[in-house]
Image (cartoon, rainbow over all chains, first blue to last red; front, side, top):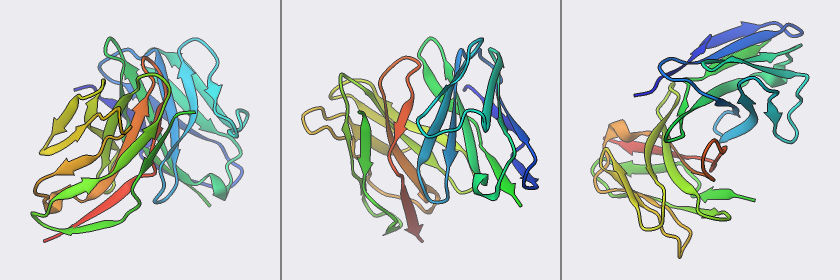
Length: 115
Length: 112
């Protein structure tokens, strides 16, 4: 089956620093990738839609200058959390849309802890 | 807008018990419906899906039927196992490249 990877799986950073999370589709090209955030014991909240070669579309309430998304190629999207604060600590999950059935495949997630 | 409502958890059952997790949805048009499962410490996995009314999705002994008349997609399993302990998410999607809307998730504990 289709595989989506995320790197790193866990990261701890200090308040004020920036962290980059990578999402890769390993065996297919994904024109669209999604970034989600999951709070403890809560559902997934869609943050943004990432399309290759164009600017990401952010959901209402998500700061685009804080959560920078770059869809550099058909197999790679990156999420950069800029000037991270403790409240940004969360589980970040990406998904990639695989044609022709346009199913979404999810990455294993990245746990970010900001100290 | 589109939304998904699923039963609150946690749900605790004994092994071999019958499981039902209710899910209802609100959507325009004809969405696709999904159940995802998240095992402890792991990412989301697609458990089953249905793309049109009266379709039944099934996998690993789990089943769910797309009921348009009741806008429901309840998850059932006849005999649960300890290994089924996880969080289950009901979800819908409007179609190609469309975002997935998730329910809040239901945590399931199966006791041996």
